[in-house]
Length: 113
Length: 114
Image (cartoon, rainbow over all chains, first blue to last red; front, side, top):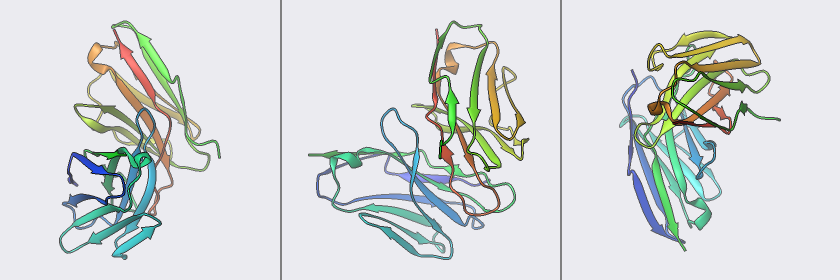
């Protein structure tokens, strides 16, 4: 089955810096890659996603890049703010049929004011 | 959009008791997932339903855990008998199937078994 590795497990940055979280996946058939943000005590919420026919996607301060050849994808957050502090999860799945995403273990991002 | 609704939000009970967690998916979503989240093991998929049918229950830890989805708008996760190691946050999520659709999570049930 699919295996998703996520790094780093903890990331500490100063406000205004950029943050990058990286994930690798094992199944070359995976074609949908969502990212979720989970604030303390709350539910995971989708913040951005990318499909395998696209190499990069941006939404204001966040962006996701995908390298299908290397089977890795990354989340980039620019101009970080304290409210970006949360746990971020990547996931990979094969759409169609039995859609079951595989999640990474999560990255705890801490943004220091 | 009411989102995925879970109940109860918190449950504290003594070991050996039966625990029932409930979930109402987003109307129109035909896939439903139950997850367990702990610090040690992260986010674990317990069971996945598609069109009310259990498709993958390989994540259900043992026979003490069972899940049902009697109709498209309701699912339960039952633990009987409960043990302290079952203490975790249990999330229900729903999505559309067959295309690149994200999961929508409920607010979770924080379960504490004493």
